[in-house]
Image (cartoon, rainbow, N blue to C red; front, side, top):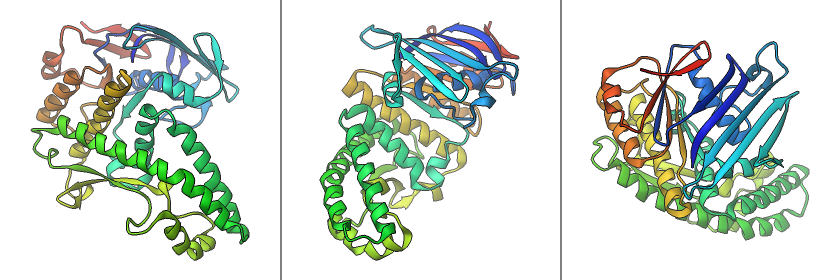
Length: 358
């Protein structure tokens, strides 16, 4: 997927902006608070209808305005153009795709697949499984069309079982049976995806010393030595005490390991950032192979935590994958500028106003 054009009105310090982009790398340079991250935020909003910086819509809209509006003209790999519009007003979203109102955010996400790397992305490596599971679900969602429906039904059944656990009802076995119907298919889709993900990751990390020995493994969310039904029965007393179901694919995780040891114990913050970027690029590689569409990459504060060698190596990999990329930087560097190809663009932003850099 490619974003050819975007219009932004009344988002943070951007009163009005209309930009045309290259299909390769778009570098946005500016000082702190200039508006460069707000551009990434606008793209993220058009893909997810929510911000990655704030949960409160009021903080997104300019102080003296009642709404913000965004528009993007996108183009698929086969040349099909799609128009996406978003308005936020009164705490509500008004979304249109090709003039048709859209209610399901999943339809928006499927229309504009994006991956976001921020200075906080290291949490995916360092912290709990919910971050990695979110990335896993995103990947499977974009390449397995039935996955969304399976996961929706499964989560509904888990909610029913949790209610039964809290009420200490005798119908837990009924919900166990329902869980098993959907859980094993979800597990199989997740496991197959992780295998493909690891292969794509290995292709990207080849020759990168601190990363090429890393493997992506799959944890299914319960003891591998047990069937899910046995695992549910084994945990029944604990689940009743806690009031929620503690095993199943909703507790799945990916393991990032070197020689059996978790990478969070071995990599620096900059290396973790490098790793997360390759994980997301590997997902784009899978999507490009299966769906003939590439992910739009949003990279906030590219230079932070990365030394010059790491920046150059990562930039080369990104260029090689030919994904449309939006990359913010604070300082212009000759080394980075020399890396820009003839199809790449650099923009300068100051006080919410954008111009092509010279």
